[in-house]
Length: 173
Image (cartoon, rainbow, N blue to C red):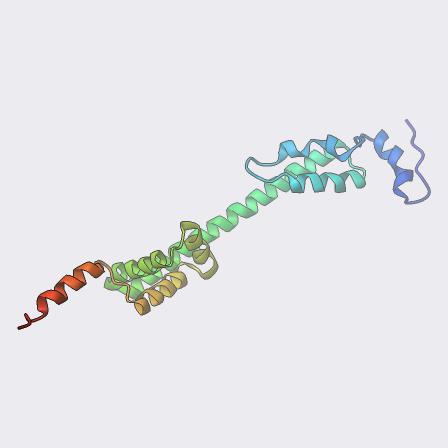
Protein backbone atom coordinates (compact mmCIF):
# COMPACT_ATOMS: atom_id res chain seq x y z
CA UNK A 1 0.00 0.00 0.00
CA UNK A 2 1.07 3.50 -0.68
CA UNK A 3 1.10 6.09 2.07
CA UNK A 4 1.34 9.74 1.22
CA UNK A 5 3.65 11.48 3.69
CA UNK A 6 2.66 14.89 5.04
CA UNK A 7 4.66 17.94 3.96
CA UNK A 8 4.82 19.45 7.48
CA UNK A 9 6.09 18.16 10.82
CA UNK A 10 2.88 18.73 12.77
CA UNK A 11 1.98 15.74 14.99
CA UNK A 12 -1.66 15.82 13.84
CA UNK A 13 -0.53 15.50 10.21
CA UNK A 14 1.52 12.40 11.04
CA UNK A 15 -1.06 10.75 13.34
CA UNK A 16 -2.92 8.89 10.52
CA UNK A 17 0.41 7.65 9.10
CA UNK A 18 1.58 6.32 12.47
CA UNK A 19 -1.77 4.65 13.05
CA UNK A 20 -1.61 2.93 9.67
CA UNK A 21 1.91 1.75 10.58
CA UNK A 22 0.60 0.11 13.75
CA UNK A 23 0.69 2.76 16.46
CA UNK A 24 -2.13 2.11 18.95
CA UNK A 25 -4.84 4.74 19.49
CA UNK A 26 -3.49 5.54 22.99
CA UNK A 27 -0.24 5.11 24.88
CA UNK A 28 -1.97 2.84 27.40
CA UNK A 29 -2.54 0.22 24.71
CA UNK A 30 1.19 -0.57 24.49
CA UNK A 31 0.90 -2.68 27.64
CA UNK A 32 4.33 -1.63 28.89
CA UNK A 33 3.23 -1.98 32.53
CA UNK A 34 3.25 -5.76 31.97
CA UNK A 35 6.96 -5.58 31.11
CA UNK A 36 7.99 -3.80 34.31
CA UNK A 37 10.19 -6.09 36.44
CA UNK A 38 8.47 -7.48 39.52
CA UNK A 39 8.62 -5.17 42.50
CA UNK A 40 9.38 -2.08 40.39
CA UNK A 41 7.20 1.01 40.04
CA UNK A 42 5.30 1.30 36.73
CA UNK A 43 5.37 5.12 36.69
CA UNK A 44 8.28 5.28 34.26
CA UNK A 45 6.65 2.73 31.95
CA UNK A 46 3.54 4.93 31.72
CA UNK A 47 5.64 8.04 31.05
CA UNK A 48 7.77 6.24 28.46
CA UNK A 49 4.61 4.95 26.75
CA UNK A 50 3.50 8.57 26.28
CA UNK A 51 6.87 9.44 24.74
CA UNK A 52 6.86 6.41 22.43
CA UNK A 53 3.29 7.14 21.36
CA UNK A 54 4.15 10.77 20.61
CA UNK A 55 7.01 9.57 18.39
CA UNK A 56 4.70 7.24 16.48
CA UNK A 57 6.10 3.84 17.44
CA UNK A 58 3.99 0.77 16.94
CA UNK A 59 3.39 -1.74 19.75
CA UNK A 60 6.15 -4.12 18.65
CA UNK A 61 8.71 -1.31 18.52
CA UNK A 62 7.64 0.11 21.90
CA UNK A 63 7.77 -3.28 23.60
CA UNK A 64 11.13 -4.07 21.96
CA UNK A 65 12.70 -0.85 23.22
CA UNK A 66 11.20 -1.42 26.68
CA UNK A 67 12.65 -4.93 26.89
CA UNK A 68 16.09 -3.70 25.87
CA UNK A 69 15.86 -0.82 28.36
CA UNK A 70 14.91 -3.19 31.21
CA UNK A 71 17.82 -5.50 30.39
CA UNK A 72 20.25 -2.58 30.24
CA UNK A 73 19.11 -1.24 33.63
CA UNK A 74 19.24 -4.71 35.23
CA UNK A 75 22.77 -5.25 33.87
CA UNK A 76 23.88 -1.84 35.20
CA UNK A 77 22.42 -2.59 38.63
CA UNK A 78 24.07 -6.00 38.74
CA UNK A 79 27.45 -4.51 37.79
CA UNK A 80 27.10 -1.80 40.46
CA UNK A 81 26.16 -4.38 43.10
CA UNK A 82 29.15 -6.58 42.18
CA UNK A 83 31.51 -3.60 42.34
CA UNK A 84 30.10 -2.59 45.73
CA UNK A 85 30.55 -6.12 47.10
CA UNK A 86 34.13 -6.15 45.82
CA UNK A 87 34.83 -2.77 47.44
CA UNK A 88 33.27 -3.87 50.73
CA UNK A 89 35.32 -7.07 50.82
CA UNK A 90 38.53 -5.13 50.14
CA UNK A 91 37.76 -2.51 52.80
CA UNK A 92 36.77 -5.21 55.31
CA UNK A 93 40.10 -6.97 54.86
CA UNK A 94 42.00 -3.66 55.07
CA UNK A 95 40.37 -2.60 58.34
CA UNK A 96 40.87 -6.07 59.83
CA UNK A 97 44.56 -5.81 58.96
CA UNK A 98 44.79 -2.24 60.28
CA UNK A 99 43.06 -2.99 63.60
CA UNK A 100 44.60 -6.49 63.82
CA UNK A 101 43.97 -8.06 67.22
CA UNK A 102 41.81 -5.10 68.32
CA UNK A 103 39.29 -5.62 65.52
CA UNK A 104 36.67 -7.53 67.53
CA UNK A 105 36.77 -5.10 70.44
CA UNK A 106 36.61 -2.01 68.21
CA UNK A 107 33.81 -3.56 66.18
CA UNK A 108 31.79 -4.07 69.37
CA UNK A 109 32.38 -0.44 70.39
CA UNK A 110 31.13 0.71 66.97
CA UNK A 111 28.14 -1.60 67.27
CA UNK A 112 27.41 -0.20 70.73
CA UNK A 113 27.45 3.36 69.39
CA UNK A 114 24.97 2.45 66.66
CA UNK A 115 22.72 0.80 69.25
CA UNK A 116 22.94 3.81 71.60
CA UNK A 117 21.73 6.06 68.81
CA UNK A 118 19.00 3.59 67.84
CA UNK A 119 20.24 3.09 64.29
CA UNK A 120 18.24 0.61 62.24
CA UNK A 121 19.79 -1.96 59.91
CA UNK A 122 18.68 0.17 56.94
CA UNK A 123 20.37 3.26 58.40
CA UNK A 124 23.58 1.31 59.03
CA UNK A 125 23.49 0.02 55.46
CA UNK A 126 22.98 3.56 54.12
CA UNK A 127 25.90 4.83 56.21
CA UNK A 128 28.08 1.97 54.97
CA UNK A 129 27.05 2.63 51.37
CA UNK A 130 27.64 6.37 51.51
CA UNK A 131 30.90 6.33 53.49
CA UNK A 132 32.25 2.93 52.63
CA UNK A 133 32.32 0.12 55.18
CA UNK A 134 35.75 0.92 56.64
CA UNK A 135 35.07 4.63 57.10
CA UNK A 136 31.62 3.95 58.55
CA UNK A 137 33.11 1.49 61.04
CA UNK A 138 35.86 3.94 62.02
CA UNK A 139 33.26 6.71 62.37
CA UNK A 140 31.02 4.65 64.64
CA UNK A 141 34.03 3.43 66.62
CA UNK A 142 35.15 7.03 67.19
CA UNK A 143 31.67 7.95 68.42
CA UNK A 144 31.51 4.88 70.66
CA UNK A 145 34.97 5.53 72.09
CA UNK A 146 34.05 9.14 72.90
CA UNK A 147 30.76 8.06 74.48
CA UNK A 148 32.51 5.51 76.61
CA UNK A 149 30.83 2.53 74.99
CA UNK A 150 32.75 -0.53 76.11
CA UNK A 151 32.28 -4.09 74.95
CA UNK A 152 30.87 -6.23 77.71
CA UNK A 153 30.10 -3.21 79.93
CA UNK A 154 27.20 -3.89 82.26
CA UNK A 155 25.43 -0.79 83.43
CA UNK A 156 24.20 -0.81 87.03
CA UNK A 157 20.90 0.60 88.23
CA UNK A 158 20.38 3.69 90.34
CA UNK A 159 18.89 1.51 93.12
CA UNK A 160 22.04 -0.63 93.27
CA UNK A 161 24.16 2.51 93.49
CA UNK A 162 22.12 3.85 96.42
CA UNK A 163 22.39 0.58 98.31
CA UNK A 164 26.16 0.53 98.02
CA UNK A 165 26.39 4.13 99.27
CA UNK A 166 24.28 3.29 102.31
CA UNK A 167 26.55 0.41 103.17
CA UNK A 168 29.62 2.65 103.03
CA UNK A 169 28.19 5.22 105.45
CA UNK A 170 29.28 4.91 109.02
CA UNK A 171 26.51 4.50 111.59
CA UNK A 172 25.49 7.74 113.28
CA UNK A 173 25.67 7.98 117.00
